[in-house]
Amino acid sequence: MIRTTPIAAALFVGLSLAAAPAIAKPNNQLTISQEAPAEARAAFAAWVASDRIQGRRDQCYGIALAGENDCRAGAGTTCAGTSTQNFQGNAWTYAPAGTCQHIQTPDGAASLQEVARNNAR
Image 1 (cartoon, rainbow, N blue to C red):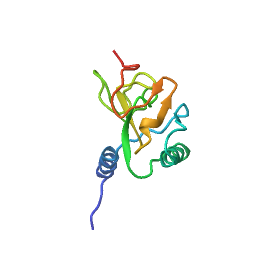
Image 2 (cartoon, helix red, strand yellow):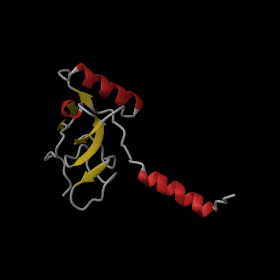
Image 3 (tube, one colour):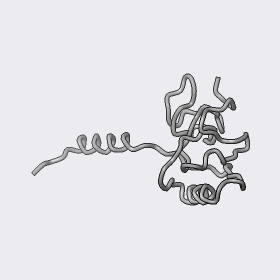
Image 4 (cartoon, one colour):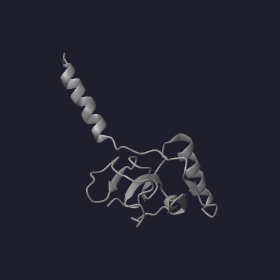
């Protein structure tokens, strides 16, 4: 019989959580273009309604609120949760595949590549 100490159990849980990718949730300021294909509009609607991405996903720049990015936030930052501006152009968040190029924010369009907008200095 294998006995697990509380410390070993805590380490296992911590490692498991660290290995799981953090995926930021959509925010209520995001919209999708009416010109987007029906499939993209449906994937976006499902993501917003459930806070989960079904299927493939893309790294979408410029859609996260401050501190809610999945990764990449420019010079001087580390990764997830380090963006300092809403809709920061060099911080990405996962979005359902095929939706990013159709997502709109109050500060402009989202992008599959970094955008020069609200970047930390």
